[in-house]
Each structure stands twice: as C-alpha cells, then as structure tokens.
Length: 375
Length: 182
Image 1 (cartoon, chains in turn green, red):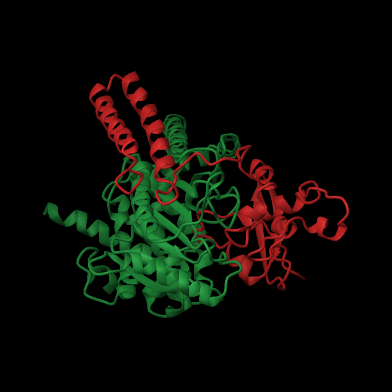
Image 2 (cartoon, chains in turn green, cyan):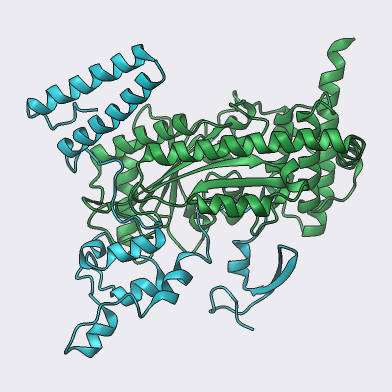
C-alpha cells in the first residue's frame, strides 16, 4: 500500500508539477480542508452560471471549428500571465483522469464524454471551474465549503463580468441569458447546497421533505446517485426556476429553505438522542468498527458507514477523528479516484478490498496523530 | 433489449431503484448507466426532465396556421441553424441563440410551463447589453435593500446604500452608460 500521495504531498505545498497532475494528485480539493458556516450539516455550496456566445451554435449542434473558436475566446480572457487559472482540454486526458475530475465535482460527466470536445478552466485552489463547451458554451462553477451562497455567487459574478467585458454574450431583453436548455434561461443560475441529513433520513422524513421542497420551486435529490435513496445521506437542494426571479431572490429563497432543513435535521438529531440513545450509539460505533476493521467495502456500504461516523463526530459520540478526514474519504473511495491512487486499474472486487484498506489505514493514521501529542 | 433511456443503444445494465417502498427496474446501456453511477456528481441535470416533459406536450404547443399544412406541423424554423419549433419541443434544447428570436412568439408559453409560470427575465443584465437598463435595475434592487436595512434599523448600512444609489443616479444623469457603473 502506498500512502505517498498522503504523506508526501501536503495540500498547500504541492511539489511543482504540470498543471493537470496537480489537480489529480491533490488528495482532496483544497476547500474541503477548511470549514464553512454550518459545516457540520452543509458540506458545500455551489453556484453555476450558464452563458453562451452570440453567433455560435450551441454545443449540441456545433462543429469542431466552432468549438475551438469558443474555447480560444474563453481561454484568452482567463489564462494570461499571472492568472490563477489553468486550461485543460478533455482530449489531452485519459478517461480515468477525466473521471477523477468528475468525482471531485470539478467537471460534469457530460464534459468528460470522450466523444465531445470540451475544456475546463480551473483555478489553482479548485474553487472555480469553468466548463467550456459542455451543454452551454460557458458554465462558471464556484464551490465553497459550508453555507456560503452569497460569497460563492459574488465570485462567480465577478468572473462573469470579466468574461462579459471581452466576449459577445448571447442575451435577450425579454428572456435574459440565452441557454441551450429552456430550464436554464434567464439568470442561467443554478445554486445548490449539499447537505448531510442522516437523522431526517433515519426517521423517514426525506420523501415528505422532497415534496414540500418541490412546491417551493426547488428540488432536493440524492447528491450521489439517483432517486430518493441518497448515498451516504448526502442530499443536494437547488433552485429549479431560473426565469422571473432575480439572482438575489433565488439565493435568498434557497438560503431560507436550507436554514429550515438545518433546523429540522437538528431537531431530528435531538429526538433520536432522546428516544433511542443506545440504539443510535450502537449504530454509530458499529459503523466505526466496520470502517476500522473491514476487509471488503463496497461503495454504498462505505458511504453509509461514513455517514454514521460523521453523525457520531457531530454529536460528540466519537472523538479524535476530524470531519475533514471523512470528507477526504468520501471523495477518495470513488472508483476512479481509488484507481488513480492505486496507480493501476482495479477490478470492482479489487476496488472493494482496496477501499477497505484505505479506510482502515487513513482512520488509524488520524487516530495516531491525535494520540501521540499527549505523551 | 434497447436502452430505456436513450432508446438507441442496446441495454447492458439493469438499474434497480427503490422509491417510496416500490422497486423499479430499468434496463440501460453503458453510456446512460454511467450517468446513474453513484458519485457521478451531476449537480444540475435530470435526464428524465425537460425532454420528456416537452415531448409529451407536442400538439398543444404549435400554433395552427391555415393553408400550409406541412410547415404548420413543424412550426417556425430558425433561419440560422434550421431547427424547427417542433424539433425543439421534441428534444428540449435550442440549436443556437437565434432560435430565441425565431420562436419568440411561442416561447412565453414554453417558459411558463417549465419555469413555474414565469416568462420574463428580471435578473442581471450585462453592461454590454445596456448599461442604462442595468443601472436602473441595480438602483431598484438597491432601493429594496435600503428599505430592508431601514426596517431592521441598520441605518449605517442604509446610508451606505443610499450613497451608492446617488452615485449610480449621477452617472446615469451624466449619460455615463459605460463600464464605470458597477
């Protein structure tokens, strides 16, 4: 087992490498190490702005020449001297590396599609990724830890202004920002927060909540995977409507909703502790035991156990393990990341063994670090 | 068996979904199945969303014109990319920015369907489109914020916003619709 990537490359002082290697090697996206507001329940905030250039067909229909033209124009604005951005063409990366960027949420699965031209422009701290020639010509994405809707939006807005000053945006006086899909037209803004809601899930409240959220013109779905079952109890709540509401109103409504969900989750956690304290503790400690000892771990089981342990840490039941380690493991345990880390391609069965080993050794390492200073 | 999602490629994967206690099986091809892979992290799109929705709606959406049965079926056509309104409804995606002009009459009803009754943009306006419109909107927005600040007795903040509004109004009065308007 090689732990080189962990011990050798610290998050901030990565060894000088070519830009793409840097983004692949970083164990964890830098923002995951830091903490944001409500970071026990809100894992991250994401803002996405969809923009298009006038005079070019949308990626669904455009030619290779048009794609390259769009890419050249967008890259020229952001990747000059002294800019903290790197421009990475999808064609230049093998499939596994593209998948790693998908698993880090830096690009969408659609951009990773090898049959389509696409490019990502990444900021050095990985909080900003601009997808070029995904469904729209330009998609500005900002991800911040914790609940930071306004801050993340302002960062995206600022990049939008810079691009707009140099590029001929497609904009309509009636319909606003023109996008390839009518569900994005208007502001082109999709704001979302990723929430860890184990207590609401355990108490079977999520279906009811999903319905209530839909009535507010917003949507809640499992953040990893599809359907009402959310892997690792991680849910994503986002605005559905992009037209007829200003950016600030969209953000305010989402923030209000998120705060209500946080309150409900906290209430459900209190209720669980009061009514079934022993059962809850048992479940949490069992999951901890499995992460520390299992020899085979499939993705969904690992996600469930990580969720339990995370709840245990939030409730002060488990001590000595930092939540940021769980954030790391949640990303790391995904198939492409696992193989990137192993330095070889792994069959699904081998992955489960490698994943189990990863969990054991990382948690042991964390406990070792915490225990040693006391001597 | 053909993929339940794209209806193009052969199905090679069975995806089992449980929803409200009911289990549903779907047969998908490799490509579509990959979109449902755990951790794929697709934040924004729902593959079963808009296309399905608009496709079901074909028929009611295309205005009838007398005399030209063939082209009536297809609705207006975008002169730039050749996309017809009917084709747009089928696939749920525009072809190019000029489609918005070509389908201008039909679009409000499309947007009302997919945007909860809304059909008009009230958000950000790029400076390059119109510095004036943008500044006017911004002033309106700031006035709202100022009222909120006054309401919550944050008078310093309200005064700061008031000064910002005055600055914007001044630059508008001077005809400055250039980039100095923030």
